Image (cartoon, rainbow, N blue to C red; front, side):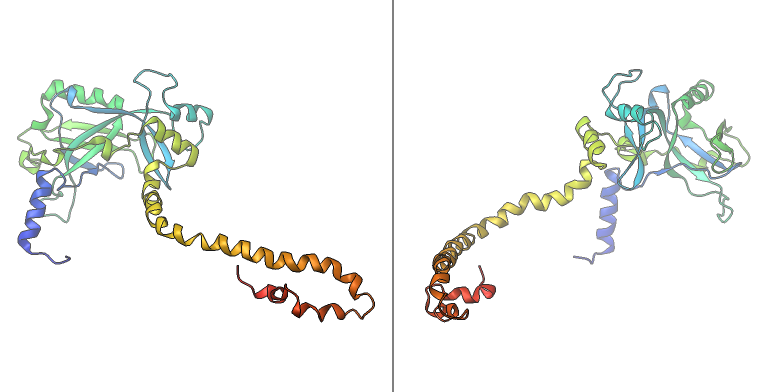
Length: 297
């Protein structure tokens, strides 16, 4: 049913919010040198930081991050993606990189807004793992970062691979950036799974499938489902199939019979003209051979 009431819509929204699916979590991005944003980080202590070792790979027509199967600090052969990169360093599979994924509520500068900034939105900030030292220092200075606002500034033009970011803790009595600009509400991250948002966790078998076919199994799962069900529809066709083999044996004798006399005809037809063999053919047992080209097996 495509139609629904306002009450039904509100009920669905409430259910989505209760399950943690009501708000889409985006990615933090400052586009150019000097751009700033105000944020409140969902980090109360060092243990609240989310880390992962990931490869950036090209698959299914786009770039994505896939978790590395080697344990932290290990360079054993547990990860086929590591081996693939080592074999082809300039290929479509990057070296494993240690990443930090920061949950935060952010407000960007927006001159068109009445406050000059956008409404706070949940985002993930993807940074190198070494950036955790910066956060650890801020935790020592300010304590629980969920209780304060920070000013994030981009230092580097768009496309500059040497771009850095500075993070400054804002005092509660700041004349412009008031605490109420971004309430300490992180409910958007309830039931949040960073591995489903920022990178893929794949098994060794799934990675091997990608290395063999260029795609992960999930991309082939949908087309394979109808194929798996095909036998259920093929079963009724099985009884119909026998008639075809029955027709084939009948046709074979029809052509086998005239084949034998045909080999004996030349001596008989020798005294007569060449057309003579055509005369007895209509009466011969193999007369249907005349319609060979139009006969349907």
